[in-house]
Length: 403
Image 1 (cartoon, rainbow, N blue to C red):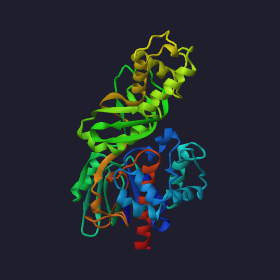
Image 2 (cartoon, rainbow, N blue to C red):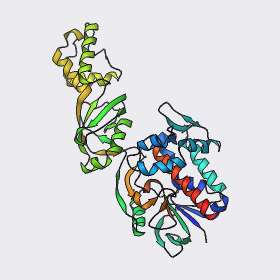
Image 3 (cartoon, rainbow, N blue to C red):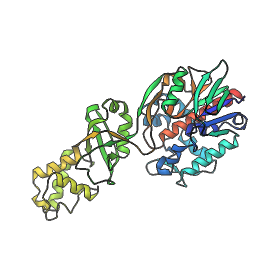
Image 4 (cartoon, rainbow, N blue to C red):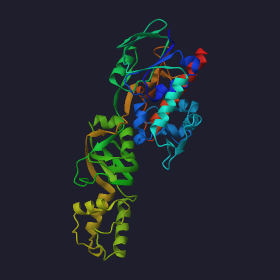
């Protein structure tokens, strides 16, 4: 009888398998329902794989997790981003830290990470069963019975890392676990507004976005898309406001500051610019760092005549421009999934997990990691880091118990 089953071939599952060693690995079977494992790793970072984030203090690191902050502190004390970097680089996958502290393979290709994980798993002699969907798990006295389309298998230990599908949640619910209802965590905002129409692709290096209704705000880069707004600033709000925004059925107002100035300061800046550039065309000369097309759109909706020079800009017109740039109100009506990097809030109730081992408190010898847990983070490599850390802890626990 094989000792260990790993259900799910994502980041947490493969990192566990890659760290088991040959003695335990040879007694392990990894079940993955798709024909291609590590799919989220493949698409992360636009295909470059955002492996982790250059935040090496567990106390600081947990602040990037809307859910799981308290539990992850002990997890990251055992294995944190510095350990992740060392792990991959010691296996000849050099990594680099980019200006925004995101960490990628030097190759800029997610296949470097995937091949490393697959190679280490194969070195450990783990049997990999692709296109093998687990339909049911039953707990017997000293073992688990795993049923798939192709047959039934017995195992002493189960590592459950299948992602956040409804079927996976149901399997754990049948084993006695409580499930916090999953809802989207990373999503973009759907906005139909004439101020954004036909401006797809325009980006802002910095914007401050707030949701007055739930008293929440975030800042960071922002992007106009064909459906509305995206970018790190928007995604931070979606993650931290996931539960409240779900209750609002994703219909709410946002207030946006496109410039690093408050309203009064923006008025003063524009007035000074007006005095220094009186003979110049308001439409042709953009006093801000964001793209000219967006500046012209703001002028169109204010509205400002196309032949106006700065010297003829009235106080009222100037204040309207400043208001649009520092406290423009936009109506959000719906959400869109953020690319293929779908992340959910919700999952296994964290009170039911022993985070020193990542073992279920409800079912002995059942270990749970990855997105199936009620843990999620903003973009930037943080969700993967939780998977690497949890998988490493499971593999160390099993080595200590079995060897």
